[in-house]
Image (cartoon, rainbow, N blue to C red; front, side):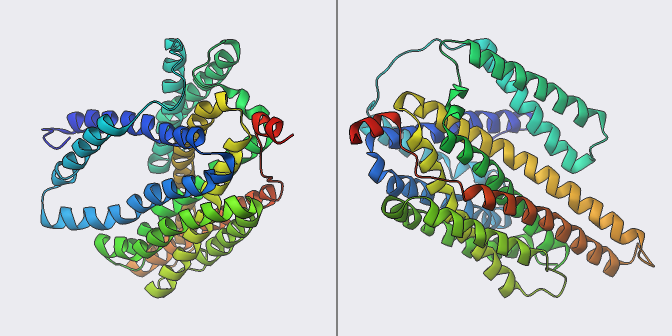
Length: 385
């Protein structure tokens, strides 16, 4: 990626990076589920949350500094030493902690899942940019949907499925999957919408936008291990329900943003949203995975990570579409639609509409969160009995 002479080469490099990340994140979660007993998994997952959430928090700010002072290629050059160090440490320290079974990989399932998830992510991403009526959007989403249905059907037929969807038979895990899907829609969408608001309405620079969002990301990262420890002590409901309530209130505050909004108020509301997400994210995932029997832990972690990536694309497309529609509606009633002041007000109105959509779906998730229980796997229940 660092030495790519054109966009195509850069894209290939990014795809290879995505493949590595796609293997690493579920693997780390599965290792935690394997080596920690259920009563200590919350704290361990919280530490993972610190790493997973802290990195995206400081990333935009650091990358802004790098791009302003150096070439964009240094975004990749500077990562190489850390990647090499990780490989060396991993080769020296890591050991297998689970039984190696060497299952047969079904290539047709891989193809169907790639077309399915890839088509839906690309289609929704394109819809957010070009609109829902474009043939490219309609056909890619349709192809992705059909491929996903075939993928699900094949997994239910195989004795050794690539992704065992029987995990959804466990009610706590199924509920957590829905919670995480909608929560990550909110998380990724707000990460897109807030910079648009700051740069398009408040007229701040990209670097300052990153600085404004930095406190919330840092607080979210440091809250992750705290929420994990609290999960081990009190269970998921004590954290998830207040966390979802904080997220709803924060998103409602986002609907009030306009060109007169102060950066201090924006920082405070964003911090509150990140606290709410931290109270929900790792405790909910831990509760869902705890209910699965051990042989389904790899599949459960893969399902949750896949849903998070897909939800980000879908949520961003929906938010952008609602924002564009709201802006057009405002400008259609303006006396001078081309006036810069009216364009700014229209953008603010569209963003408010998008966050009202976020409030509605967050309220739905809050209701679902009331049914969340501390899941126990069949092995754990048998041992306790």
